[in-house]
Length: 522
Image 1: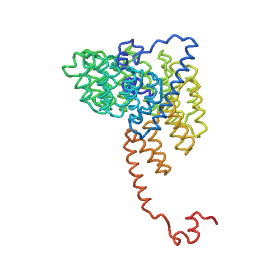
Image 2 (image 1 turned 90 degrees about the vertical axis):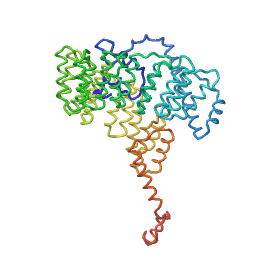
Image 3 (image 1 turned 135 degrees about the horizontal axis):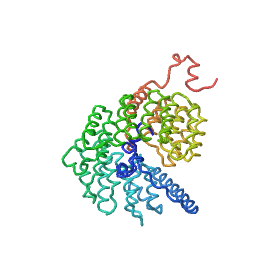
Image 4 (image 1 turned 180 degrees about the vertical axis):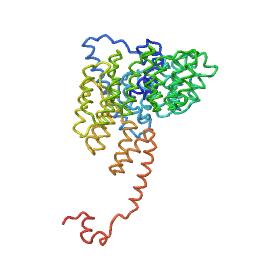
């Protein structure tokens, strides 16, 4: 994760994967853990239970893969035909299996919805829990299938105990992501219909969703409205959300205005407040002001934590001031502010860009030795993969990654796919695509975009268009640049097909020309 935005991960995670109240509750804990709360380390399970758990997980993955292939093979059949075929399969369902199947179809809502409806309405002896409903809500919301979302919400309200805070967080974020601002606001006020209270954390979740998707002005108006006072009052957490919204939007002017409002109000800025404003300054290129505010924190006794240090380090690296960044990196240890994986990732990212690979691998070795919070993650290896020069380096890095307990992610698969496409390694492209699908990591919109653009660069236009049509059939929305590319491809293919299929003997060099065109041998 980009350390410059480390302390905003709760506001801007790519996928809404945790309960929003956990995010907001993090402000209530001690100052040493202001980014997020850490769960207690669970007691070690008996070895036999661990083996059983691994075996059960493998069996679930295998069964889910079979269902995935079944749905893939039935693509194009009617819903009735698919459900009838599912009736005959005799699968024993539980929440873990159904969740696994749905997760494998995060970017393909239609087969996921067919399977979900069959599992919830026709499968014998199975009644899904809230996790399954929430996963389906998230998939439908992600692909803007709000009619289906409404149907699902009706079902959840009919069955008691299904709709929870997680459900609320998913829906309000998906409305905001689709820029359905009024719907997001209305959904907050509908909480009592689903048996939930109107409280400050729910209100903050709404503001967070609006700010994340650039509706900061609306969020601030809501915050300042008379009705909102019962939810936020003089709470600094709510103000931090709005301040962060202006920061994410890139409006330093508005961020300064809101910062001054906080300073002159009865609220006392906390580390979140300082961190957000420092980040806003660095994003606007005001690095010297950010560093000055950062230094003033030490002087005021409001010690910056690792997230704020990471923000400054990343900003210095971005401005190619790597020696200064390394100096703060060393200073962190002296001030008992221990670095984490994001600290190392910022340094590694920028050192890779200038090809200081010796220093990169020195830092990587250090991370592996320290372990814990410094253990390399998918982002670490992503930066390293972007720096590889030859195909044979990729398996070595993946092996090192897995050896250190870092599992493959969709992002890593896409990065490897992009490299193999660039190098025109067809077999490896196919293998990576199949592995991604088998392990439930895609293909997603990014995977299809890589294939479409990569095949276009290789002038394999028909194949590129096949991937585009498949992506569209799954309900994925192509990027504007992809649409432009496809329009260009269609024009090229139309021009190519309108040209004469054969060339005259005279134009092609007489008999020799005819021989080449017809494929005759000498």
